[in-house]
Image (cartoon, rainbow, N blue to C red; front, side, top):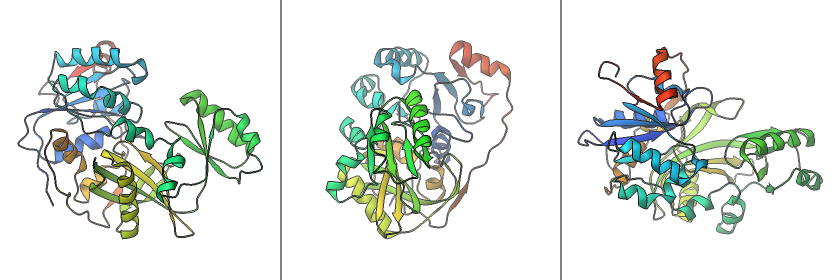
Length: 359
């Protein structure tokens, strides 16, 4: 077991996804966990939108740079990164958004040539956990998945009308999921999600039971270096957890270890699992990055973001400290007060470099 301290590191860590609010991104809690581990180096924030609220939080990012959207491809990404590197060295990057993880995986060699380290899954591992492939990959390995339909057109809903038992969950391939109580609602959610995230769209059986989320760091060889399970206590209308408690459930932990072993997962991830009324566990999703509630792991005694920094640098870690069951989190929203000039720096110049007085 290892207690993590980063005070000896004089490096720069970049973290993406600084939006907070009702559907927060994981970047701000990841940075806070890194700083809690005694980190005295520089934190750089990567953002895609000048209104990402974490930009305006004091003591989060020392410098902030706007990045091109991942959909623009590798060349604009590397051009922007090289510009940033001309201004500041970056030693480690922790991407926190599903849509950007693939570009960091594919550019691992180019990043290493620039002295940048990551701790991420392989492209094969990333693809196997895709919502579209869950139902094909996991059941043969003894891991149950809710009945799932992959639809390339809305006509598929009509073709399935005799098979579907409403309500069902309609999911975008990258983000968002909505409950549909009838065929009309299924069509509406299909069209909305297809317009926003593209095809295919997933229709999934709803499993009634207890919902759990588990944040994990896998070693890439089939083992979990760290694992913290929580049960949601407060859930928004979008299904996001705004409160939860760490739970101790050996059966749940064994099930999660089985999932990670099947993938040989490397790096951080979040498992969404439901224990059905039949007593079986069902794997709902695997998110290939830290969740927005990752500070609960740190608060329960297991600082996974700090561990990820060390792992990216090539340090060998043993199993992380045991978590404390009963540790609670409640998400808190507040108004941030800033100056319009900071918004101007990001919007016009695509960057914000704080002075010592601003930190």
